[in-house]
Length: 155
Image 1 (cartoon, rainbow, N blue to C red):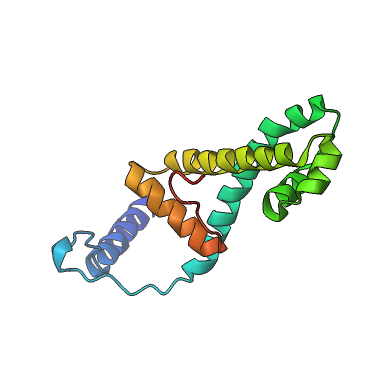
Image 2: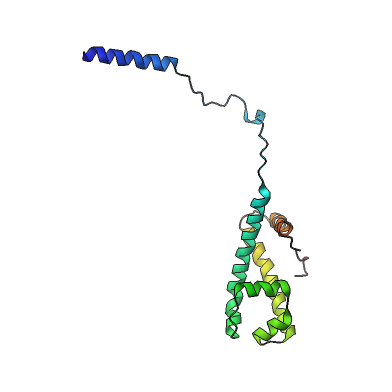
């Protein structure tokens, strides 16, 4: 009985091996002859998330630099207020909150803005290889977010 079962299992296994479809994992066509399928992936949303995340990291780094300076002046400034100052450029309100003159508030905003663009360029430079790529990536982020990039030397 044992010999009969062993022979029967062997015959069944051999029959399965001989009738099974063979899997050939070799590439039959050279890679140059292959065509890439058109992938219509909505990258606009991906680009938007990337740009927003990059700018958010930059604002957080800028806030980390400037919050202690404002705290030394006795002003507890949160990140949304700092961003509003950069965008709205409300110098009288900023001057009153920090206890400085309006022209000093204007200079402070100018320095923060310059540092913001420098930090943004430094963040981008981590992921690209050369200065031209940094500039191109920065242009793309500005285009995606609808920002106007300051002119070289004007920052």
